[in-house]
Each structure stands twice: as C-alpha cells, then as structure tokens.
View 1 (cartoon, one colour):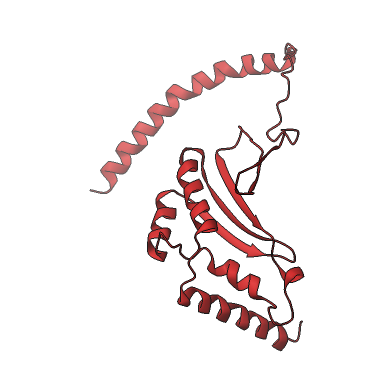
View 2: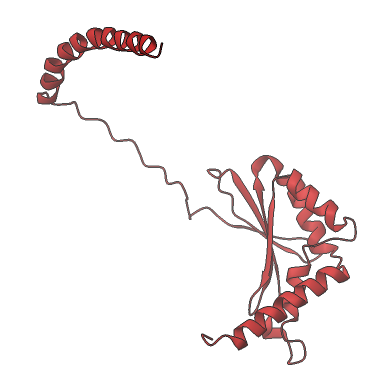
Amino acid sequence: MLEIPNLIRAKRLSRSLAVLIPLLCALVPTISAAQGRETPPIPERPRVPLFDPGQPVQRKVLKNGVHLLVQEQRTSERVAGVVGLKMGTRYESEDESGLSQIVMRAITSATTHRSAPDLQLELIAAGATIESGAGADMGQIVIQTTRERASKVADLLSDIALNPAFPYTAFESARTFYLGKASDEIASPLS
C-alpha cells in the first residue's frame, strides 16, 4: 500500500518537470542575451537622511519654571520624553552619598494618584517603557512609546515627575539593590 502513493507522487513530479524543463530551456538564450546588453542609466534620486541632526531645538520655559526642549523627528515611529533633575553625587554630602540613586530607582514605582499596580497597567496599556537613573550631576526619567499614544504617556510622565509617591517597599527594595551591588563590588577581586 505504501508503494502506490509514492508512485503517484513520482508521476506528478515527472509531469511537473516535463512542463518546466522546456520553459527553462526557452529562457536560457534570452537571459544570456540580456546579460550582453547595456542597461539604461538610472536617474539618481536625492538622498533623504533618515536622521537629520539639523532639526531646530525648540526651547520653552513654562510659568512654573520648567524648561522644555523639543526636537521633532518625523521619520521615527517612536516618541520619547525625558525629565532631567539636578541631582547626583556632585550635590550630595558624605552622609547623603548614594541617595539620588535610590530615589531615582524608586520614583517610577508609584505616584500619589496611581498605585504601583495601576501605574504598571497604564504603562502596559500605553505600550510604554520607562527607565530612570542618576549620574554624577543629573537624574533622569525616560519614557518611550509610539506616536499614537504620546499624549497618554506625557500625562504619565508628568504625574511621575510632579507627584511621586515613595512606597516603603519600593524605597527598601532600591536600597537593598544598591547595597548588594556595592558589596559585590567591594568583595569582587576584579574590582
């Protein structure tokens, strides 16, 4: 019984090849003749850069003293918002050392208007990613999403920056994270 389907498949394959071989033989002379011809020159299209660093940066100062810097890139599907805060090890005393790292890690956990689970659900619904961190002289919160959801994400970013709530668990988890990181760096022979 297994031989009959194999025989039928072989007959179908041989019929297909019988049709394709004459077609391929007919095309071979035209292909080789086309290779000998010169192709007409293709007119050059003007190059449009994907990223134009020459776009002007718009600067605005709001009534409350917040400085806005906006540079639009219409070629991108993604939209990013960044809040920069004057903080970091440059402004910390010996007793406050590392506090800005803990604050920036905990700031994205919740707000006074949104609990931690609500904030996470809204970020997922908006298709947004959020990151925060602090350097030597500046802390920043970065949020990214698509162009269509930019207004919703701008509301979330402003709520995070203006109304942070530092739940005890978020502060303690950030503190534990950085203490563990510091102890690993001290105990590591590579450091």
